[in-house]
Structures are given as C-alpha cells and as structure tokens.
Length: 112
Length: 114
Image (tube, rainbow over all chains, first blue to last red; front, side, top):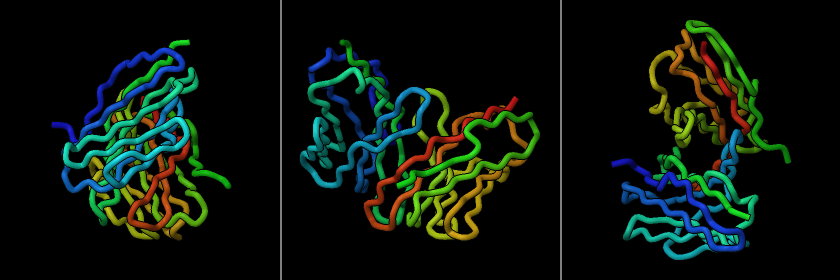
C-alpha cells in the first residue's frame, strides 16, 4: 500500500463547476496535510495546509480533513481554466519527522 | 520577498561525471529540504537540514549522493559518478522553524545524465 494515494486522473471538470480532489494516507500519526499545485514544467506551489479535522476555506479552495478515515480532500469552487494543473497531496508525520511524503498527483483539466 | 532560488536550472552531464546543484533558501528560513521528482511522480524526499546539520538524510539513495549547508543558508547537493537513473528534477524547499512547517519550493534543477 502506498503511503499517500491519489487518483492520477485525468479529472475533467467544466468551467464554473466544483472540482473535488481526494487523497488517502496510511500513517495514522500524520499531523500535517498540504495541497500543492504544479503546472506542467514548473515546481510545486503550496495552496492549502490543514492540521485539524474539519474544513478550512481560503478563497475558492476548501481543504477537508478526516483523520479517523485517513482522508483529505481539496474542493475548488467556480473552477477556472487557470486551475488546470496537477494537484499533489503531501503528508507530514508527527513532530520531529519533517519530511513530506507526496502522492503521485491528480491531473485536473478545466474545460471552458 | 525573494523565493527559493536554485542553480543551474538545467544541467546536462555524461555518465560518470560529478555534479553540484545549488539551493538558496528564503531568507530567515532555518529548515532546508532536497527532493527529487521523476516524470509522473510526486517529489521524493532526499535530505533535510535544520541549520547547518543534516537532521535526516534517510532519503539519499546511496553514497554517491551528499549534501552540505556549511553556513546554515545556501546548500549544495553533490552527486558523484552520475548514472542515467539519476536524471530527474531536483527540488529544494525551505520552511520557517515550527512544528507545522509549510515548505516552499524553488524552481528546481533539471538534471539529465547522458
């Protein structure tokens, strides 16, 4: 079982709709969760971080965390063509283990 | 302010050669990380520095890989006797001190070993 799993996609969503990206992780002691956006040929860009169960909203983005189910998701409202990218889920274990473990990413395409 | 910078942006070398990749973190960030990303994969952890010391080098694939951060700022990743399998994008990230460190990535160095 991979430590961090994402559906590789591609996920196609019409412009203006909600894009839903999902991620599961295997290490129960994981404490910090991050979503990165990566455009083709570019480096990952941090867009959301979440540490507690529940929802965290930032503009059009909402991160959702359920530690009991070991599940984290990213919702993008009012999807725009500029949201087309690969979204990487990253997980950091407990304090003292500072590395991020990444999923393979989900490729999202917003259809105009 | 300025983000993480990496040089060179591209490096082409021949099998067996030695390469150095440089990372300049965000000013004031005490933690520095190196990752490697192959096509279609997420970044893979290599090594983490807190200050000048390597706090975790468990991701270095073998002893051909080595990294230093002598003054607690700029870091250099060194690869000896390069192999074709070393070809990847090498990413550097930095973060401020704290238990919920958010890591900010540089643009990466694309290494191609012929």
